[in-house]
Structures are given as structure tokens and as C-alpha cells.
Length: 344
Image 1: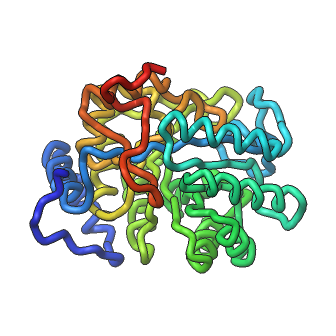
Image 2: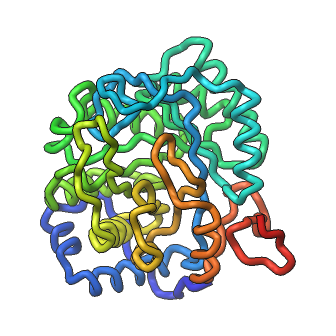
């Protein structure tokens, strides 16, 4: 453990734009030092939460999110596929656990959850994955309070619903769903006592002010999201955002560090776009306060680092996986060096 015995920084939900700008605009090394200090007050810095993400219903989404290859509005080559069979999802969840994941996230390319046979199947899948001892997360689009309650009863641990960007820039990226729709789904998730996973995407043409406003939206939720994924745009041919330049690793670190200071207890996830980062840039983001990643070679439909690469990075940095919320002891993880552990 590397947590200190110092008095923890206060948890706040009343951040102003000026206060956030003062933090965000610090010289980067000063910012990362401050964030690393906060990180050590609240977390074991040698632990990284390892998550796995599976698309259980791919393509054909009626939303027009400008970054998404699964939108029916764009020609991206993504094949529309129906909801996966129960046995297929559970088998993949078991394989993810065997590979070291402690959280299993399932995504469906829906605008909203509908009360039909597909939702009934999702509820059964959630229960089965929960029985495997994994933290079960889902991202299924907009959600009513009653639907959230059913997911909770089935065993859902977390629900992902990103705000994506600032409220002001949002309409430049998405027109088929309002910013308030997203906040309402987060509220419905909270009412059902499901933990919240909510973050955003950088690299979509937004300004630094937009990035800070997005973080302010998240940081002023009470309570803070338990998980805050920071994604870098992965430009996909056929989407309106194709051709956008890659996000610089130092910009990624600045967002991670600011999020860590504003939301000290949250798991801050170095999420999509990690494939574009060097080992050194990823290490810098971990120093800045990131303590969660997605493992596996694909995030829904976009590429992600190979498990073997993560294994080597974890070994080089002396990191180990954070155990699932419901398990005792250290989980078996092929990404962490263990004596006599099989190299698979």
C-alpha cells in the first residue's frame, strides 16, 4: 500500500469554472504531482482495476453520435448484429474472468431500453454474470427508473452512461438525444442504487473550456460517479469525426490528473484511445491518477492494446489488478507476474 496517513482532501460537489480552470491550467508536472498526491490519499497506487467490455448487440443504433461507428446514420462497415445468445455472453464473461478481469461491461447499440424480450434476456444475462463473481456493468442507452430497478434486482453493479462532452458542445456531436436525457438516466441509475460509470471523450474538436465544463458536470454530481472513464476519440472512417488528429498523451494526462483532483474517490479509467499511447504515456497517466483500464483487443468495435502488451506494462510498472468488490484475496491475473504462473 502506498496510501498516506495524511488528512484526506475534502470531497466537494460545488466546483466553479474558475476553480477548475486554476487546477487544469497548472504547469503539467505540478498538476500531475498534485494529482498523484491526492491519488495516494484515497487509493492503493499499485492497483489497477481491470475491466472487460463486450458488445452484446452491435450496430444499427438510431442515434447520430458523431464519433460512433455503430450509428445507423453512417456507413462505417460495422455489421448490424442481433443481441447475443445467453450462453455466448456468459461464456465470454467467464473467459474474461479467467484472463483477469474483475468487471465485465456489456454494451448494446440501443437508443434506449425497451420492455421486451431482449431486455428480459439481458436481465437473465446480468444475473448469470453476477453469479460468476464479476462486477457487472451495462451500457444500454437511456433508462427509466423502473428499468434501472429491474437491472439492480438482477444483479447489476454499475451502469455506464457518459456525458461525452460539455453541455454547450454536445449539440455539435449529437442531435438525437439531449444532454438532459443523459443526466436523467444517471439520476434514474442512482435512484435504483446502482453505481454510476460516467465520463467523456476528448479529441472531438472541443475546446479546453469544454473539457473543463465536462469535468465540472461530473464533479458536481452528488455523489460523484464511482467510475469516470476518460476516452480519447478513435476516429472511424465514415463518421463525421473521421480524420481528427490523435490526442496527445500529455493532454490525456492533464484530463486524468484534473479528474483525479476533482473526484478523489472515483476510479478514473484510462479508456478508449489507449492504443495510441506509448508505454511511457500510459505510465504517466497512471502516475496522474488513472487506476482502471479496459483489457482485451477490442472495445465494442474499436481496437485496444493486446493483453500481452498490458501484461508486460503491468510487470514493468509493478502494478497488480484490483480485486473485485465481492472477492477476498488477490485474483489470478495473467497480466501480473506471479511465480510459476502460466504464460497464456
